Image (cartoon, rainbow, N blue to C red; front, side, top):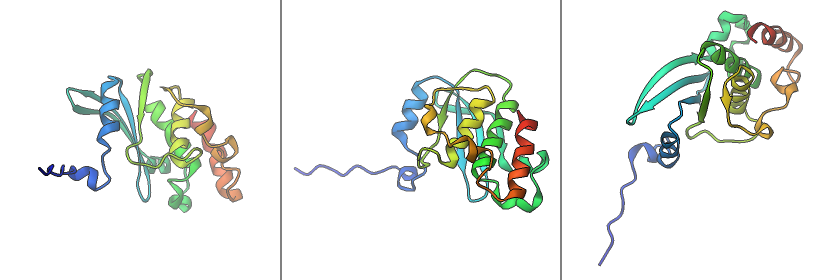
Length: 164
């Protein structure tokens, strides 16, 4: 007798949802912070789930940095490591309800020191309680833009104290 082949769910085939990790996140019963990286921006959402229905509490897009003092000339770098750190600080400030959250990175590659983890570092420095190992965060020099050209470095160094 032949076994029938199991059909893989559409969102899994499209590399959009990891159902195994989503189930673990939902079973934790903690609100989660969803971080997504698009071609131009970071999108951060605070989400609460009950009975497998998600409710978005807060949304922040790195485009908001333009209103906070990020120069229009550097608009193309809104998904860089310093921009990720700054938008993490903005999201933590917007999320007045401090407490314990779990991070949902979706199908993003989790490489220590990457741009995604610069957002997590911004959230942690902003006062959000997240269970994360300090080894995964980018070094302080990269978060502050020391590796960038002088004009971008200066802009980043001005924004960090302003947003904290």
